[in-house]
Length: 414
Image (tube, rainbow, N blue to C red):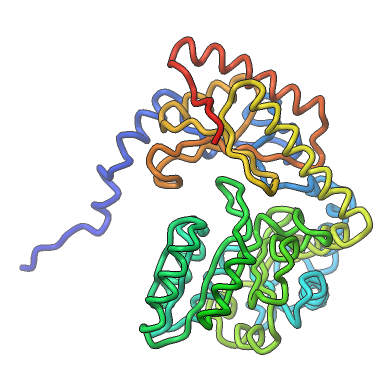
C-alpha cells in the first residue's frame, strides 16, 4: 500500500505553536479579544472600558446616527441578505448608487463593488493578470495583493519597501519578461502609516510602460481635499490606472471597491471569479457605506479629515514627549506606530497597556521584519483631547513600571 501523509500534520508542531502556547498560558495573546459594545473611541472589551487605539474607524462613523439609519433602511428595504451573486440575483439599486457615487468621488469612469476588501484585490489582480505578465510589488503591500498575484500565476518581482532604485531595477528586469507589467503599491501602508512616493512611482511607470494600481484602503476617507486618498493628495489621480478601497475603514462598514476605466471595470464584472462566485454584500453593509460616503463627500468631510490628522499629531507628539520611539513621516496619517523592536517585549507591553485601560494592536514578525516589532496605534476623528490624554497617561505609567522590570524601551528618533 502507498505511504500516506496526513494533510493535517502541518497544523501540529509548527514553528509558531510553542510561542502561541506560551503566550496563551501567560495571557499575553493580543488577538481575538472580545468586544462587548460598539466600536467607538472608548470601547467595552472583556468587562472593562478601554481607550480604543487599535481601530481603523478613522472618521468615527460606525456610531453615527446617519450611518446606522442607512444600514437600518437597507435592512428594512432588502432584508438580511441577497443570497446570490451580483451577476445573478444580488444587484440592487443600492449597489448601483454606491458604485456611481464612488466613481464620482474617485474621479474615475466607473467602479465595481466587492463583498470584502480582500476580494477586491484578489478578484482584480487574479483577473487582470495572467501567466506571462509581470507584477511589481512593494514588500510592504497588503497580503490580499500578494494573494491576488499568486492566484494569477503572473511573475512577481518584489522590491524593498519604498526603495525606488529597487523598483526601477525590477522594472528594468521586467522588460525582458515578455508580458504586460503592472505595479501595485499601497497608498498608505497599514503597519507603519507611511505614504508611498506616488509621484516618483508614476514617473517610473511612465518611463517603463507599466500600469499602476494603488491600494487606498488606509488613505481613502483621510487624505486629500476630497478625502479620495494618497493619489489625490499627491496630485496623481489621472496617472493611476486603478484604485482600490475598502468600506471597513473610514466608510464604517464592510466591503471593497475598485475604481478605474469603464472597460476594465466591465471586464471585471464579467470575468472576476471572486466577484461572480461570491454572494453579494448584505444590504445593511451597503446602506451604511453609502451613508458614510455621503458624509465624507459633504462639507462635513474636510472637517473630519482635519480632526483625525490633528489627533494623530497630538498622539504622536505626546508619545514622543513621554519617551517612546515613534515612526515619523512627512505626511501624517491616522497610524502612529510605536517601535518596541522585540516580539516578547511588544506582547508584554501590550498586556500592560491593556490592563491599564488602553487597547492597541501588536505587530510582530513575520508581519514586520525581524527586530521590527511595534505597537500599532491609530486614532479616530471622534477621539477628544481628554481621551487621548487618558491614553497617554497610561502609556507613561506603564513605561515606568515596564522598564523597571524588563529594561529600557527604544527611545531614539527614527
